[in-house]
Image 1 (spheres, rainbow, N blue to C red):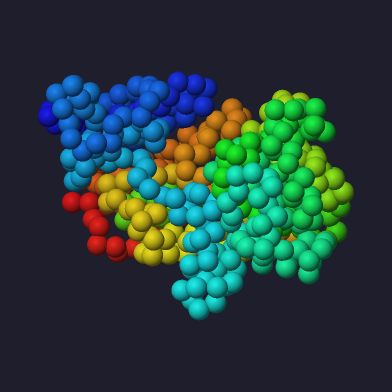
Image 2 (cartoon, one colour; image 1 turned 180 degrees about the vertical axis):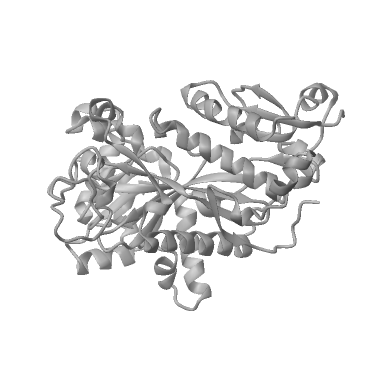
Length: 445
């Protein structure tokens, strides 16, 4: 096999608007941070072979790869990474189910609580709403689950009939399959409606139909306690980010925070200081649980409203948030990543020559308590929109700054002017705040 190309980054994403958005931000950031490097941009539609063996036909393909692969997960050449573990870098971990799959995240919280001798404490310590995971292939299986996997939930629902719950498919994204309910029969009706996903007339509004999912194709689900008292903000007035009781919030909206988290090697974790506040399209109320425009803050569902008002997403710097918000986010992320890295090597496999950007979603309630909702691998940066595109450009620029400090032998410049940057601690680099640094015995040499 021909060796990899030193001082070259292979960038590969499938064709499409989402990839174009990412590349528009990523490629200039690479060129600015690594001026002596070649950026080889390609596209692909299928996953490369993950077999370790390399034949003559793949020699030609493999020799084009650079020392760094920054690619869509499905286009990463993992075999190449194995062949040159001390000389190459890749922008994803091979397995991270413990974090990014909703049902596995439930298991992580349960294991965390059990390890500390208090099973229910895992949710509180990780800042997560109480969540139940279950498997279901057909709506009529639900009745049996109330006496088995969902028995504890059934008891909670009976004891607290006014509490709200939210249903989510474990592997879906972009708000697919999300529904809010209060009673057992409401959940049954939701799952029955999913079995009639091909009948749009059964759905009272377009968002319900747009977010329907076939029950038989989902299999794994979670039910999570719905945070009924979110901190309501005005999209154009981020200064309302407070608990000031004199503010009239009757016309304000629900929002969630999208926080970008960079994991590097085995293992350092950084939190990007610029976060996004993503808003629902309608003022918050609990009078209509089927009106998803009130409850869902996913930007993929807000395109029409954004074109009309331009108010559905606002970028807010981490520094502008109350200190207690920033502190809670840092603590939750450090605790969670540290736990899975040291206790679940099967479902979170560390590599010293890997890094990854995650999009982590948090909700803040009216008491400024932070709740972890979910962790997304390969976040869709295009949902940020053109107006906030500079934030994603700065995210990639800061990411490269951290990587140059973490991997100076591979990415560092050789010029005297760069020496100061290379000797800078990653924890002090602009843009990110380091919240975790583990010594796991896996090192990049």
